Image 1 (cartoon, rainbow, N blue to C red):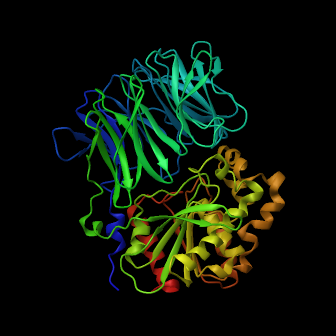
Image 2 (cartoon, rainbow, N blue to C red):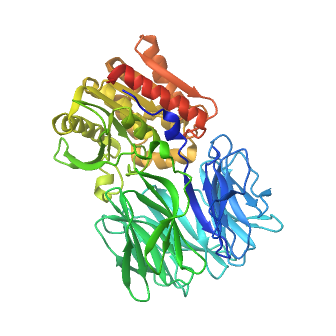
Length: 594
């Protein structure tokens, strides 16, 4: 059987982070068109963008400073996630701002007069994030808020005298408050009972309220307005799906956001003056990173779908028609080979209906070899988007199934907590029900079902093959957790605090970890295993990979290990991705091949 090499799939570039120049004639965005994410510019009267930054490390984001032509960018070194901030001039010159490479910096926007920026950092203590402002001309840095906790700046208040800040209790629970810069006092706006999240806040025209996405006292994330004086919350859009990506027009009259309908986006514009909703059509995929043009006539956004890899699109607000602006992801070699999935649901051991996307290869006869790919997070969601290696596997004749097992986001507050702490293995058990569905309803070959996942999905892989070894013919663990005990001991201290809320703590749940951790059950593994990991991973330390690899090697179990010295939690470099996923495909061919 002939197939296309992995390189064309990996050479598909992506574009993101669109931001309009103040004159509205230029759109800046980030693309890895040259192999490394850099800032590019697209002029309205030119057909092809031009590169405007030339750094040796990836650029993570780009934002304009209010009322100026200057941009702030973020970069780290070797994918270590210790983000530093820089000024990027129109000529491409770069000026360091934070210059503290041992610490993390999260950008919080610029003041209305364009003279100051705000950011948070763990400079004082590796576990805690304090708040700072910095003068753009003198580069003077002032600490404006210090507390033991995870704090960040969301944006400046329109009056320029205060900051809208965030206090993060967990990935699913936070609060918003107003920090007065002169006094240092904070007035919290969203203090609440139980768990609630408040996302993407936008100041109203009069500055007296904020529009925000929240799930306070409800299952799904809706659109609300919060009065800054009384803290009263009023709902504007309540649906039985999560709303995402809220942004506000410059004239403060239009709100744009997307609806996440089971992993597929629908775009919405809400006219605040007329109290009317309008939607725009897109193919199957995900809408992210919305940005209005200075005159509010256009809305730029990133669209990413199985057949439409990540590029910048633009909606004409007046005609409600969208068009594709960039074509960095266009690849005629593979376009006709790309596959869209079917959205399926299967019943788990306790009757819970679990959603999944099922992709079938275009050409295949007989029973299907299947790769089950489990997402990370775990408070995340696999979406119907372009994934180069999954599409590559499809082209080679493998079916691919991507489940959103219990614990995934996007299906309500109750669903996301169904795998917390001592319920951890219920999500692994969901995979056993999926295998039964694939065999009975998905035309899967029962002797050719592999499991693959990255990060927390890597733990799911290792848990599946240690607790339910007879189901799997092969397994691929990418930057996965092999022991919650050693993971919590060695991950970054600020990350450990947030992860314990989901996984449990060593002090209270250590015995349970010993019971479920794959590292203690390696004798039960029967399927061949491939492990891939980056040596610079700050999230899941590489020891998580090496301890299970060493255990398997000691008993001569078939295990293939690839260690990337110049990668972190994410594999960024093209040559490494080619190495990784060529090896993965060869591994699959060896053990579940056609």
